[in-house]
Amino acid sequence: MPSEILENRGKLFVISGPSGVGKTVLCNYLLQRFFPGVIYSISTTSRQPRGNEAEGQEYNFCTKEEFEKAIQEDSFVEWACVHGNYYGTPYKFLEDTLNAGKNLLLNIDVQGAIKIKNKFPDAVMIFILPPSMSELEQRLRIRNADTEDSLKRRMANAEEELKYTAVYNYTIVNDNLEKAQKELAEIYLLHTGKS
Image 1: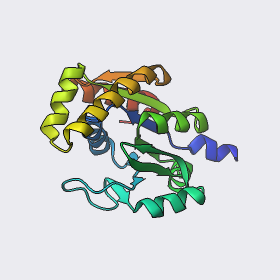
Image 2: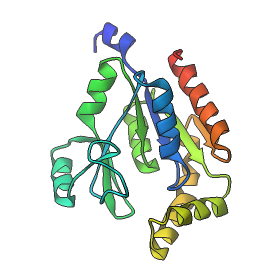
Image 3: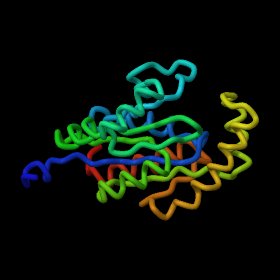
């Protein structure tokens, strides 16, 4: 890669954490505060849209069969099956955005984050922690998007995900939204030098 591309290459920020910890709220804050300096990487998923989610906004939605075809075509820099649904990061969008000098924000699960870190060692890895597991369960119940079995599976997955925090450069406990937003903004500014 020519040195001028490397010098102008954007930064890759990866945010992970258990379901219900507040990743989407924190990502939206970062995007609103620093846009157009940072762009959200829209993952592709085989799951059904929730609530007001729109195609091409929160996710690119597809069928399981379409996703499996894209896997065969090696279209994803990472992909995983989480809670019975596929999620993946399109490789072309990621490379094109970074090479254009734009900072990119990914909100992905631990499995995908580890794959990203292996392929992009300079990625800034941020793990969002709940204040406690009981608070996390309460947040998931308030969201009311899960059956009891699904909730139990998400809680078990959360316990497993917490074992991987050492892979990340930073951890933020989301016990106070304003404080968590401030910490996230400080990390962004530290790595970009932009306000």
